Amino acid sequence: MTSYLITTTDRSRWPNSGHLVFIGTFCLPDDPDSLLDQYTYEIANTEVAPVDKSHYFQLSKLLHSTLSRQLALALNQCHQIDESERYWSIITGVWLRSFIDLVVSRAVVLANIKKQHNEIVFVSIDHNKIVRAARSFSEFNEFTKSPNWNSLVISDVWGHCTTVETSTVQIFEQPLDTPPKTSTASRTKYVLTATYLPRLKEALLNLMLGSWPHRINIVQSPNVECDEIRRKELNFALKSNDEFENMLIEFVRSYLPTAYFEGFNKLKFSISQMNYPESPKAIFTSNRHLYDDVFNVWVAEATSRGTCLILGQHGGSYGITKYPTFAERHEIAVADKYITWGWNSKGPTIPGVVLTKVGTQITSLKKKSKIIFVADHLWAAPRSIWGDIDESSPYLTHVTEVLQLISPICQQHLHVRLHHGQKNTGHSLLEQWKNQIPQLHVDAGDSQFSSLMQESKLVVVAHNSTTFPETFALGIPTIITWKPSWTEIRDEAKPIFEKLAEVGIFHADPKTLAAHLSQIYDDVDGWWESKEVTEARQFFCAHFSRTSKRPLSLLRRIITQQQLPKSSEVS
Image 1 (spheres, rainbow, N blue to C red):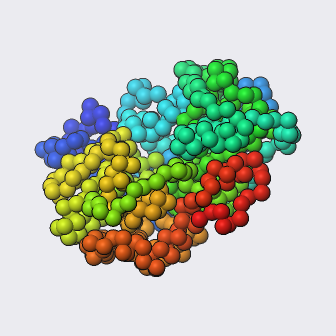
Image 2: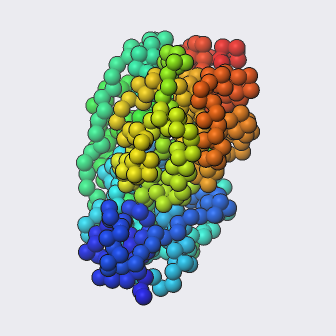
Image 3: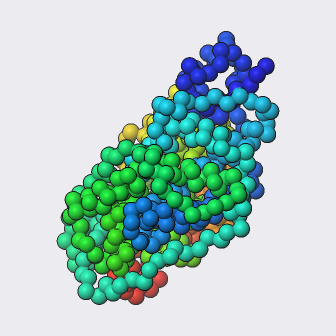
């Protein structure tokens, strides 16, 4: 029987019969069993061994090092300007890292499928129906969740390469070529936007810096269509005998968002609509650089004139996961200062505080009874083999086992909180939860999480997320669970998580978690406030969930380059 590799949801492209190998759950119909009248089918095994995952992660980083310089040169030439690689990296870098991660991951998966299935027939979307190049980075993010766009990328990779090995492994990542800064002595203004501080605290910090707080206009990226003929002018100087490197060059030329090429002049012209100072002393943001292309061009222009760029950590997993996200890698590469939630490493990192919870207080939870169980969102088409959790992974099995093993009294007070992003990244998990454990209360992610925390005596977090550093910072009793195969811990964080495991905060085994939860439920606070647990969570907080007696003063000193406070000022 002929086997077909299905990469599209468009059933008009499928064969009339045969054995279907789905590259991911994003291609499956809502009722997969309906296929059995016409086909046999399976989900392709896309699992990658840890040693291979590490190799290809390093390969992706090194390919970025090469292509970042090449893209900067090509864009300078086309736009007839002479800007540094850092200038272009501030504008295009977060897209380029994300895109290379995605392409390398797709290539690895396809190479493994070719080894598993000889002479398999490839089935993809009609290329004429899908646009490759997004108009902006925000639209690119939406494309990564689209079954049709993913089918197009997979089809392009399938048709261009047979191997993922490349000579680029011999290249070492180097610092960006940043020109010398001009003096900022005469500049007095600071720009704070999307800092992740609560709005009132951000306004107070503005005043402490001598700047008047004001809302910044969000200007949409220009709506410019892709010009495939003009894109041939993008001249990449790299000449390689390596098939994979050459493929990536062609892909960058084809998939580069139009805001960076066809619409770049309009993008620069849009800066004036934001009403920003031309060259402030410093810019501080924690996530605007991840969605606002106009803002990024303004930042690139300002930093080229000597403005200090300060970025802040905007969520969990930073400093913890073995494979830093494309956002973490980008931010550390382009920032002059990088304010973390406590951790420190080479480069511009400075230990700060949990920005999202500055000034937040939780009322006593001693008389509460609810247990909040926070689940991750799963990806039908994961963006990388080292980042997102695949829908076909054993994640749901692990979590379901935990929920089934805990005592009836715990189940009675359990409130399962689904990730709001699940609506866009994969199939609904709501019905699966209700079918497997009907008595559970399941929240699809629509209610305010802060309200849920106020009603709970304990939070269980089933992924490496923003949630548990925030609950630690607020002193909320917390248990963490995940399998190392989903999230590997970087070496610097391993001793901290080993300590958390010793006192029952971290669990990789559903059975030990369920037993521990049932054991402490009647006296959660007695466990949480015990000497050994207190020491373990303080150990964690010192690195990943820092708080401060005077957080705004600490941030002001970091931003203004004053001497940092003594450790006694930070708890």
